[in-house]
Amino acid sequence: MKYKESIKHFFRQSKSDMLFDIFNVTLMVLLLIIFLWPLIFVLSASVSDPAAVITGKVLLLPVEINLDGYKAILEYDEIWIGYKNTIVYTVVGTIVNLIMTICAAYPLSRKEFAAGNFLTAMFMFTMFFSGGLIPTYLVVVKLGLIDTIWAMILPGAVSVFYVIIMRTYFQTSIPQSLYEAAELDGANPAQILMKIVLPLSTPIIAVMALYYGVAHWNSFFDAMIYMVSPEKYPIQMFLRDILIENKVDLNMIGLDPAQAEAKRQLAETIKYGVIVVASVPILCFYPFVQKYFVKGVMIGAVKG
Amino acid sequence: MKFPKKSPANSLRKKPRFIHLLGKEIRKNYILYIMIAPVVAYYIIFHYWPLYGLQIAFKDFIPKQGFWRSPWVGFKHFERFFSGYNFWTLIGNTLKLSIYGLLASFPIPIFFALLLNYLPGKKFGKLVQMVSYAPNFISMVVLCGMVKIFFFPETGVINQIIMALGGESVDFLSRPKFYRSLFVWSGVWQTMGFSAVMYISALSGVDYEMHEAAIIDGASKWQRIRYVDLPSIKPTIIIMLIFALGGIMGVDYQKSLLLQNSLNMPVSDVLSTYVYRVGLLDSDYGYSTAVGLFNSVCNVILLLTSNAIVKKKTSTGLW
Image (cartoon, rainbow over all chains, first blue to last red; front, side, top):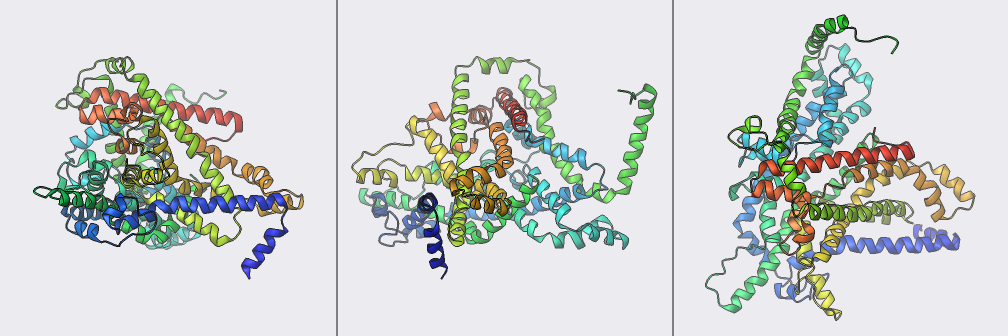
């Protein structure tokens, strides 16, 4: 029924509006293809016969399903070391981020906190002017954090931008009367935070956890400059070796030319496979993640 | 000016009183101060200490002597940078890449958001929107890896398509003339959906009565975009424009480093990657800090100037 109505509606319009609708729908379908095709292609190529991928037979759907790439990835130790490290950095990092963000946002949201304006200015200033790459690196070296998990977590422990979003949420979404009632009952600020503010703020906490979590999962640069031993690298560093530096470690010594060629093709398939493997956690959460991400931007937009 | 606020006697008395008040305030809200203390410590250690360390831009930094005790050298590093053979190349590359990026990635999300608003059928619009966010969650390494695999000579799928259509395989990645387009358009692909969210949320706040009035007056959809939607989201557009203009000298170094190779270096080397290379790979700390400082100062000046200009013209600004 709905389709019929929208078709009727379409023909009831003026000519220029019909043209507009046709243009708009065509453009959006085109965009849909542009957004999706690279992603589907990667997925298809990762499960196709390596030779078919290299000769251009795979364009959209998989050709001759072949899971050799994934078998090779299962035996590729570095990827799993990276996976494990990334999970640790993401979980610990996100917990630290959340605690620090709440610890900053809650006092700043309280009217009686006199240092609020000064501290907000102090935090905001760093958004516009910072010491930059080299002095920050030298400080991390000086603190002895190089090649420890803390180099992955502490330098980015809080983001001003998220503190401000969370402060705004605390101020606008939690009724003032609740604070006053709790104060009358003799609750101190810490009790109010734990018993009233946090339970009422689960949506924003979820948003923040996702923002910080995705950032940790995807980050490679801090590892590149601060981490020295490969056994502590996150997965993005190994992805960089494989995808950018083209270093796929497949034991090619002592193979005859035909076998070597097959391995070289397999190395190409592995590239598609690792993209899928590294992105699976985010893709699993995607419908959930995207909803909350948008919510976060909307809250931020109220007072960005 | 009528009432001089600070007579000498007043300011003498004021200081102890200020400290006294501060002490009282901290005692009253001590829980809040304890809570925020780690955050303040974080900012002092990881943001203000590096700011203090910026002084090595004017020093010959000797790691053993630290920021403070390294010897001063005045503007030596800046002179070396300004008279260096690559100064103008770096500035040119940085500006060309980011202005190209701004021209493409600034207006596209606005048009995307505007058109999305007029899609017939709510479900289709929601689908397009949801799919458009997906590339935003891909890591930079994977994005650059995909660019590399897709555009690889001979075996890459783009070149396969070109060859199937009768063309010749092109080495997009090492030919300098394609570098900027690859950089900018892969960025548009990754960020346009998510950048549009700001505008979509601004558009959802537009009063529908204005649209109804426009429809009754016989306005076409183009005219409604032009005369109802665009003026309504103008403040959002301006704020985003100020931020974009302020970021003109700051090309994304992570992406640049990932897409750089020795063949496209003449166009891909920008200020921020130069800082990384000279500072962290060659350990020339004082000099690279000077280059970084120059870059940050440019950023701040650009932000302040664009804010001032925009504010004068439209009376909307960041502050």
